[in-house]
Amino acid sequence: MSFPDLPSFIRLLEERGELLRVTVPVSRELEITEIADRLVKKGGPALLFENVKDSPFPLAIGLLGTRERVALSLGVPDLDELARRVRDLIDLSGAKGVGGMLSQLPKLRDAMHLPPRRVRRAASQEVVWRGDEVDLGKLPILKCWPLDGGPFVTLPLVITRDPETGERNMGMYRMQVIDRATTGMHWQRHKTGTRHLEKARKLGKRLEVAVALGGDPALIYAATAPLPPIPGLDEFALAGFLRGQRYPVVRGITVDLDVPANAEFILEGYVDPGEEWFMEGPFGDHTGFYTLPDLYPRFHVTAITMRRAPVYPATIVGRPPMEDAYLIEASERLFLPAAQLVLPELSDYHMPPAGVAHNLVVTSIKKRFPGEAYKTANGLFGLGQMMFAKVMVVLDDGVKVNDFETVWREVAAKAVPGRDTLTTRGPIDALDHSSRGWSYGGKLIIDATSKLPEETGSGLGSREGQNDGQTEAADWVPAPAVPFTEVVEGVLDTFQAGDGYWIIRIEKTRAFQSREVGELLARHPAAAGIRHLLLVDELTDVQNIQDVWWTILNNIDPERDVWVLNGRLVWDGTRKLAEEGFVRPWPPKITMSPDIQAKVEARWHLYGLPMRWR
Image (tube, rainbow, N blue to C red; front, side):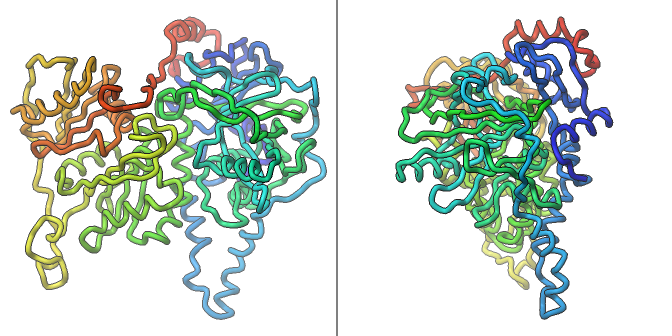
């Protein structure tokens, strides 16, 4: 099943009980975020706010807020079907001779659906605002979190064209509203939009930009997908493949760009590379932390086009799990077959919500020889946006990569700290606040596969006839927890999880305090059954393993903050200080203001939403 536009998808969700309407007036400043955040974290339905204060337009949010809704939006029964479709498309093993070529005709027919289809008339251009009519303030653009620098467009499909090659790109980059006709454009250094802008600067011209809001949900997903740089393959083509038909586009009113014919709104305009940049932010980002203010280019809106009765689509990002986790999972499934073409030993991979996409990648492999775990991890580091991965865990084939607790039990049982861990360096996500330098830092590979003799220091070989290729069994089991009652400076509480992990919550007040705590506890008798010490900040729930790892993975540069001590791996997930050599500001975690939480609590019965989602 495919959907011609967003309204048709909304109607289906409502028919299935997957969307609820809120008819009472609701504020776009923080209140909608607090309501939507509660529902997405409990796997609740999407929401359609019909009465957003100070806007004539309704707002839809959480449309892709569960795994099942993402699968439905992409026209598949489950997300694993994406991998099966791609694997079938790229499997050319039987294409030999004329008969083999003919057998590939169905695949070629699929490929012919990829290019977009130009139309003359479009729903997205039924109403046109130009000149003084342009007013972004009329759109129900959200201020999501208390410390945000202002309202942000959070689900934009930003379209640009390479000034030299003409190649088209669509990406999802947040846009802070500056005034009625201007926004920031959050093009990070690794993004295609940045490359297009730099080429426009060298050519001495403005870069035309169009921003679509809404459209087929498959296109919304496609804008988030990490497409490989293949000529002719763009986000419209991916959406066409997912839809099974060419995607309809129309020429812009004031820009020479193709835009989605079925979008709800289109913002047309330009970015002038010669103009002074705007201090954008802060913004409560998908990491669960605020990204701090920084300079980004300005987008000037020359026209707004829309349907006659449009719905403004939005999302929120923040402390996981959030809606983006399910879009990430869709990309995992879609691109797994392509990764397996390069790395045939790769069985599966997963980016858990606690790792907010790039901070943690869990893989499993069909291991054949010593060191293959490192070979696979390094190979993945070289594949597109996987270069941003911070911690890479490699498991044996058959271990469920999406079973979070099982993953860490395997790590404790099969990865000896120091022997089976390796630190390296490389590119890091520009939103990472803890790396040694902006967008550059350390990475950690953990080999949690069963070990061959060569990997344990044995003189035996693992070839046939030498030890019969036997692997090392997991010979380590966690010991019972030992009570820890000592008073240690800064330690608020501790928790031994019972599977080799000791979590320590610290109120850090001075430089190197967490390192001193780690060294003390790693040598303490209470650590007898421990392989990993996890040091977290005072805002972390030590008994919530998701919260613990979310904090740890955000707050470490593995080269600086993960070290082996007394046979244990110590992870320092506390904030870093200038006195410790950390030269950048440390951002706060995202939390909603208590007054907004109280307001939503008091008004819940007015929203008409079931109490179980409260």
